Length: 97
Image (cartoon, rainbow, N blue to C red; front, side):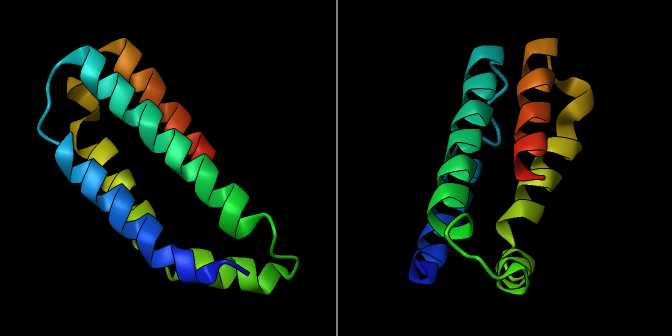
C-alpha cells in the first residue's frame, strides 16, 4: 500500500486550497476546484483503490483532515459563487464521496 504518500497528498491539497482560497475570479475559482478534483481522483487511484480491505479504506479516509478542509472551503462561500463555480464545486464534492 502507498500509505506513505498520504501526508504528501494532504500537504499538496491543503497548500493548493490555501493558494486559491481568496481568489474571486470565476474562471480561476472554477479551475481551482477542477484541479482539486483531479488531485482527489489521483489520491483515490493511487491510495484507496489498491486497498482490498474495506476497513483499511475506512481507516485511511477517517484519518484524513483534508476532506473536511475542502468541504469547509466550498460551503463557506457557496452562496457567492457563479453558477459555473458552483457546478465544479459540486463535482468535487461528488468525487470525494
